[in-house]
Structures are given as structure tokens and as C-alpha cells.
Length: 122
Image 1 (cartoon, rainbow, N blue to C red):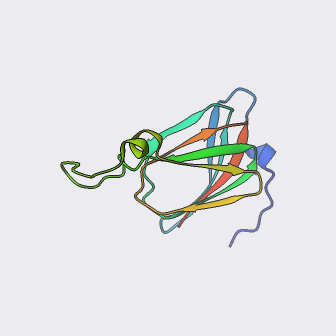
Image 2 (spheres, helix red, strand yellow):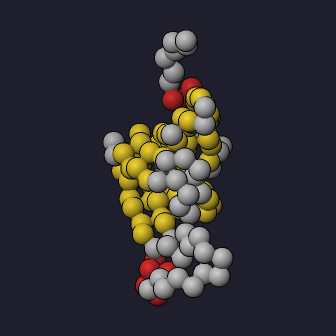
């Protein structure tokens, strides 16, 4: 077993980076990552193959889910209302807040301020 105290400032070199992801731990498909995003930087649309939790330690981020993109049917005959197709669901997560979401859901992340957060996938 490992015992170690880490300083996040020592893990991230944010002077030049717009975005940085540091793998802290991985165990049997579970992950713990430290993520830094500069204001207005985004993580493009993707799906997590595990349930996830985001804990914002600095700044503010927006997580957006688009119901149309989450369609799993082959022909996309879904009846998603027009308003939802464009806007989707948005959540603002601020410093000190936890945000949980389920696996296999298409989403994007955007930094509303320079932000650090822990990403926990289990």
C-alpha cells in the first residue's frame, strides 16, 4: 500500500497549458484523475464507460448533456423535443461541489473560469 501526500500545485504545470489531465490512481477499471482547464477550454463530446463523480476544487465548470446525442437506437427515431435537441441539459458545478452522473451518456465539459477538478470513475 502507498502512503503519500501530494500538492496539486506540484502535479499541475499550468503556466502554459490550456488543459491538463493527471492520472492519480487506477485500479480494476476505477480511475482518479486531476483535471485543469483554463477558462473557456472544453473537453469535447465523449462517453464515460463507468459511473463518474466530479469534485471541483477550484473555479467553475459546465457539464452539458445532449439528449439527441445520447440516443442509442440505430435509426434515431426518437421524439426528442426541438428545444431539448439544441440546449440539452446543462449543469454548473462550482468550487466545493460534487456532481454525479451515470455511465454511457454523451457529454461535454467547459471551464467557465480557470478550474481544477477531481474526476472519479467507478
